[in-house]
Amino acid sequence: MKQDVTQLTKNAILLLNELIATPSFSSEENKTALLIEKWFTTNEIQYKRENNNVYAFNKYFDKAKPTLLLNSHHDTVKPNSAYTKDPFLPQVEDGKLYGLGSNDAGGALVSLIATFTYFYEEKNLSHNLIIVASAEEESSGPNGLNSMLKILPEISLAIVGEPTLMQLAIAEKGLVVFDAEVKGTPSHAAHPNDNSAIYNCIDVLAWFKNYRFQKVSDVLGEVKVTVTQINGGSQHNVVPAKVDLVIDVRVNDCYTNKEIVAILQKDAPCKVTPRSLRLNSSSIPKEHPLVLSGLSLGRTTYGSPTLSDQAALSCPSLKLGPGDSTRSHSADEYIFVSEIEEGIQLYINLLKGFIITE
Image 1: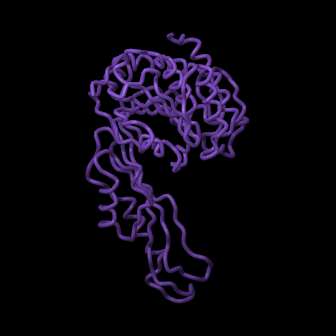
Image 2 (image 1 turned 90 degrees about the vertical axis):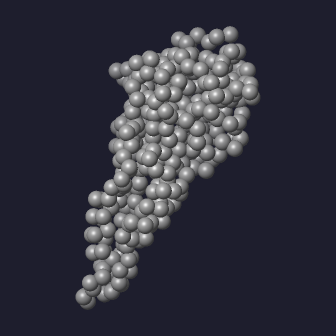
């Protein structure tokens, strides 16, 4: 029996209120997982749970059909010190639903859950649907969506729910974090030293500031290289032997993370060591039927500079959801109630408007 969209939307907003009121920092999402389980139970949807990831298959799942993954996360960052409102008290003011995780990514999560529920009993879909309400997205932890891929059947296509103002993020930058060392000669501060690791940093920092990767993406632009941390020295009268830097590299879809590492290890004026290669850039062709369906609904395409669980996926994926990315991790986080109402209807119309052929 087809679910009523209006009632589904009301229930989804109630679920978001419950999620906001329940702390769910990365790796501490047990209680919000229980709330999501309750939704599935109430709607007579069979579900499974792996750690704090809750997932379900559509009722008429057919192994012969391709599979579309719907995914968003129910963990949050910790509230920052600039909050003036209780981050765990959901409250609506001027159409804005305030609370930690309301925008990132609670609005997208409950909208995708409602959308999955709408299609759950559909018999003649061109594709299967799987929903995963995942954990540990904010921390890129080991027990998040990445841990689910060995459990789930092959995924042909994915929609990852993040705040995009319901515009189509058809590409997303990847990330490689490097630890770098700038070396020098240790000495007493009172003596001459023309090989100070700290002064050697001046040229190294300038190099990173000015370095440009050659390939520029039509959607994601340049690879962005940023020095984000610097640490060196232990006391006022000692010149240290080395200074440690942290380099944040946001990778466009012209490079693999492995290629980025090879280039920087060859060209950088100091030793650089990558922490991980698993957070690759992701994209979906602009001519993909899912994107075309979104364009037919008046949506626009863009490239996203922020990282999400798309990085764990190897299939074509689209980032799409209600809310605004600029509100994420901000004080007094909020999402407009109307954004959720619009988001659910747009998700439903999007999935009605396309067919997976392979």
